[in-house]
Structures are given as C-alpha cells and as structure tokens.
Image 1: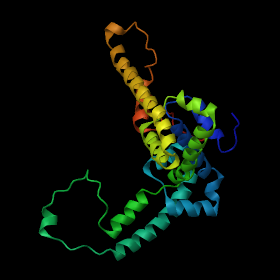
Image 2: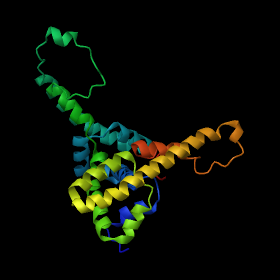
Image 3: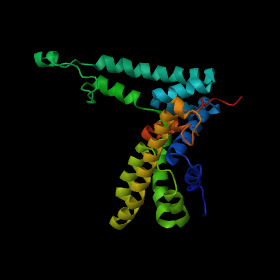
Image 4: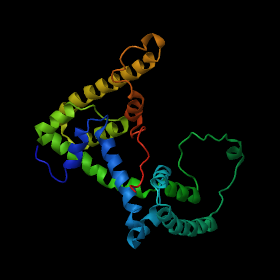
Amino acid sequence: MRENIATIPLIDAFKADGECPFCHLEREAEQHAISFILGSAYMEDDIREKTDTTGFCRHHFKMMYDYGNRLGNALILSTHLKKLNAELTKEMKDFSPGKSSFLKRMRKTDATDPKLPETQLGSWISQKVNSCYVCDHFRSIYGRYLDTFFDLYLKNEEFRQMFENSKGFCLPHFGDLIETAENKLNDAQKKDFYAVAFPLMQENMERLQKEVSWFVEKNDYRNKDKDWGTSADSIQRGMQKCAGGFPADETFKAKL
C-alpha cells in the first residue's frame, strides 16, 4: 500500500490492531497537544493567546496536571484566569434576572434534563466549560481522518482488507463513521459499506461480551485451572468499545 503524510497515521492506527483505530488516533493527537503546550510552546505569545481564550475541559486539565511541568501549568493558568475573570466580571455586571413566576418556583429541578441555558450568563459559562484547546486540536484533524478512511476504502483494496479484518470501532467513533458514510458515499457504496461494517461491529461486540463473560466465570473457583484465553484484559477493552478511549492507559507524563 502506497502511504503518504495523509494516510500514514490512519494506516498505522489500523495496524495497531486495537478495538478502535480512531481511539488510537485520538490518543496520539491529545498526547501530542499536551506535550506541545507544556513544552516550550507555553512561552509563545500566539499559543498563550489561544489557550487564554479557549481554556481546557476537565479531562484535559487533569492530563495537564498529571503530565507535570508545574511552572508551565501555572503560567498557562495565570493568564487564562486573568482573561476568564475579566469576562466573568462583565457577564455578571450585565446579568439581568428573568421574571419569576409561581409555576417556575413550583417546578421540580431535574438535573438530568439536558436543556439549554436560559440566561446569558448560563450560556457564557456553558461555552467556557465546553471549550478546550486539546479537544479542538483533535476535532480539527478528525474530519480529515474520516475523509481519508473513505478515500482509502473506495480506492485501495489492501486498506479495504485491513478494515474488513479489523476489530471494528468503539461505539462513539462508529457513530461518526456512519454519519460520514451517509454524506460521502452514493447509494450503491453505502449498501456495500454497511454490508461489511454492520456484521463487523456485531461480531466484535459479541466477541467482547463473551470475553467479559468468561472473565466473570473464570473467577469461579471451579474454573481456576482453566485458561484465561483473551479475557484477562477484556474489562478495559469492553469499556473502550462502549465509550471510547483507553481506560487502562498509564498516566501520560513528561519524559525526564
């Protein structure tokens, strides 16, 4: 298979033979972004301007803390908090409470209801907590990976075989793949793709179910001398299949 700068990461992700090649790409991208901003980049004005504006989500703040470089984290936070506090002060100053009503006061609060914020301040906070420099980094290249997948699928028989022999995808990335297929493929191509993708996902989801079930049965004393087979690490792989990511990954830290 002829590889180039656009296809190498995706092909390498399939060669890794994990539960989801797009999880592999996502991990590579976020680790690259973390090591970049906590390397010398945090001293660059243009990078700090972006991180000041965008900030980080809870997950990637935790990764940054675990990575190390306390001074780098402090410098990034100091200017980000300065900008955040200036904006928060303005938002609170401009805040105007809505009119109250008896029905509103009597309505029970449902914290599980994913409704949109009703206030300008709530909307601003929602935008801030859902904004992340590292997430944006992967999102900026994720679409290209999805496009490259279908370009290779349609034009390269060797890649097509890699896909057909793979372990499928995690559910979140499989969903993105299906949504992309609806826009990228014609009717005949969709029929062909789904005829492969759907059985592939079903087969591998059922494989993991059996592996996890055997993990449970293996802990029965009557099975203590039986072979674990492929079930020993099935818990983390099952979690990945359901929600994406790598639950068993070691903490990503700076190389000393």
